[in-house]
Image (cartoon, rainbow, N blue to C red):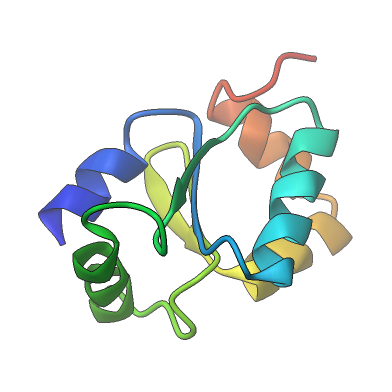
Length: 102
């Protein structure tokens, strides 16, 4: 779990995904549309992917991907990101995390 939390704190936006997950791709595209450049960890291709997936599940990510950290904090998965976007709060969260500048 420590490894995931440390990786999640390395950038303004960090996304844990799987290369075959279309929802992960959609969330990445949404975040990039604001001008953010997230760090992406694909669990199915990463050497420690299995351990990271287990840690994400222990943190409450169900399903384990996508898991999104913004501003060094676990925001959650696709539902949380879409909810923030619909309520107009995702952009402000990205600005506060210094992931985008407007």
